[in-house]
Image (cartoon, rainbow, N blue to C red; front, side, top):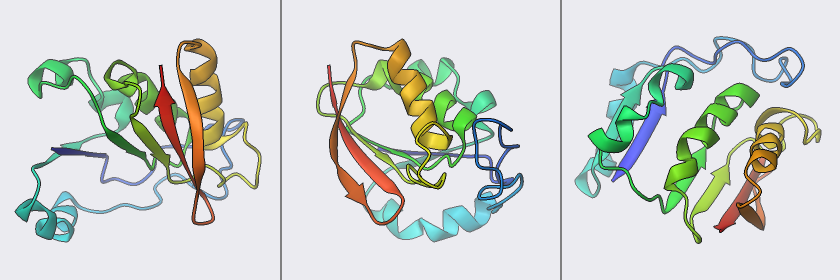
Length: 152
């Protein structure tokens, strides 16, 4: 199964100190749920794709674990662009992680190389509050992405 989380309204407001707002301004990247579903139609032939609309702060609830019987994740793509959205996502996925889970950050290097901002900054803060979790660097993807393997 694959889960897709998106507001479909565009990005929320960037954090003034923890995001590079000129790169990802509020409202950037809106799309309709209908357009998204049309774009992923081919994938439904092979996988169950569950779409959960809403901003992460509202949609990533503890009820989702039981409602969808979420216990472990094999692969997680984090394409949140912004610090708070990434932190919300990392908090949500923490109980789903296991050694070997792969986490791909789509915009790791998006803040002009400042790894204290955006996705990288949120991950740094999250790891600080979860010393039991180690991320093994598995390499860069394209010009902005980074991939890690979880080690517990």
